[in-house]
Image (cartoon, rainbow, N blue to C red):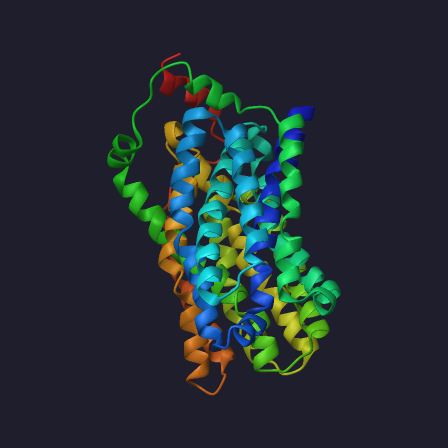
Length: 405
């Protein structure tokens, strides 16, 4: 099925929106040690900023999701991107730890809105048979942002320091111009505008079992991603004492694996179904675990990181399309993002938990990361068969049915 120019522009904008959002988030994970040194504190105290960022993302998903369901996906996406870019810039001016933590919390609110709004706009616009591969592409935006942050850290950090890393993070604001000029509104949203729709509370009450299940599933998924990514650069610096250049290269390899995994399993899900693709991807983590967490040399660690992220982001690559397909039509900009970010809230203790566990066991980050990754891989494999399989539904048609057209 051929794509229109508008469909291509929507996909590009949503991919870049999530890539640059993740880029701004991951810039911080490389400089936890430097921030702790400047503010005369320990790494777990700074890692609390990551916890707060993740914890406040549901608030952003709710605020921006409701705006998108009421006023449209396109204008909301522009406001959202501008907000997280400006807050990233302001972080670089933090005079103390308290200000830094407050700004990262506000950044979490802005970050929490982008995924749900961008994925709804895209999944409602593109051809149904393309959703699997585009889902993988959208989710690949997350490791793409991590990859971009890895490159900036490896190339610029020695010249600009930790504050300069955050100054670079204002650049995503330029994406607003692209969205304004090239991205149309979602056809499904236009259909749903034609008549009054149920409120969010009414819809969630009617779908309370689905909502509860999705939140539990996304909690496991967020432990899977954050448990294998957020403290990985710190693990390489603190436990293996690698220099910034080596850390950067290993992290780049890690994110290449993540992109490959997301694209591959996103496409595979179009053939074998969303649930089966997630099940297979999650279980790949188990045999890879020893290589990923307990290898000693940089080459083996890089190989383990590459394979682990094929598993993690392979499973994640199916999530944008799966959550949008199982979502109630009338709250599609809110529901996927909200359950995703509520999962983030419950998984937000991960960075502080892993850092504290490692420090109390003689900087043993290997053990802390392995416990989390292995546990949640099994949990996801157990949970996913209970989900709905709605591969390929016609979202514009179901939106017409909601609006009574």
